[in-house]
Length: 403
Image (cartoon, helix red, strand yellow):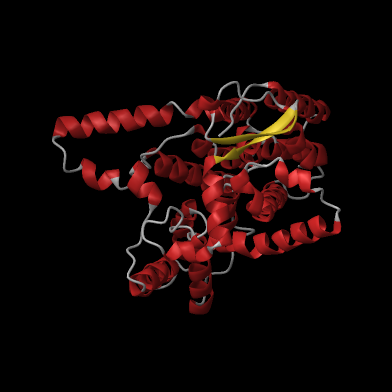
């Protein structure tokens, strides 16, 4: 992970300021990275979390992520101050930073540590899922090759060294696979188990918005494990789980109301994420069709970001249909269903960026694993290694993305 992400510091810098949002920080004349424009708000809010209680605060919809930044940022700030006072951190290091970033260095370090932990957690979870999809097989070369795609891609290139939430792009879909795949899914048979998982996963939606997709996964897993029960009782469990999932968000909105503040969701307000669905049905038929076509076109225009992975899955599907090797159909059903859920959700989001569509890659990699033949040819691992190294080299030397 560190080898791949450090190598991105030597990628070509942006030619003009119009190509990124933020500040490009030069480490040397031939190395640097982009500090994303959103990062300053994240760091300022982590430094002063009471900002979350102010009207129309930009990050008000993600308070737990800000508090995580506070929890890691202050210890890192104290460490920076201690190193500076002892002379181990030369003052000129801080002097080279833009003035507004100088008091925030500890929070920047803390958030990068969070990036590291989220990405590491995603990779460890993928390893667990790989062994469940391919039980009893020692395929360390193939597994290691697939892990390269988690550390080397346009998302880690643009966002690992800055303050942002894009590392959750990998964790959210893998967590959904974990909840649904039969060998790994948690037990949801007693009311206490259901309540605990519903409330805790609901709190994740206050960390990163896409965790709302955990709710349909949780409800489906609940139904699968409790199908023999009578329908009214099962419906009651589902409604209760849904309410408990929403409880952390409702409690946060209620706390804001007690402070006289109206809850503000910047993504919905600025980009009309999801709320455009409420508006589109008020349009006449021609306007409705035009807006739906426009958004669908914008969404499909982002799919080339994951085109390589779609191509690999389709190619393996073709080989599998020709050679007829066996696959685990329940696992394929889970992964295909999740792919449909994520594609559908991001298609109706109303805000389309390649970095958002990249969330599909974790699911496509899991599909790739599920479609592999029972016995891999000896040469397959080394072909995969060559492909992964070529992919990483291209990511390093290619121009952009920067934000």
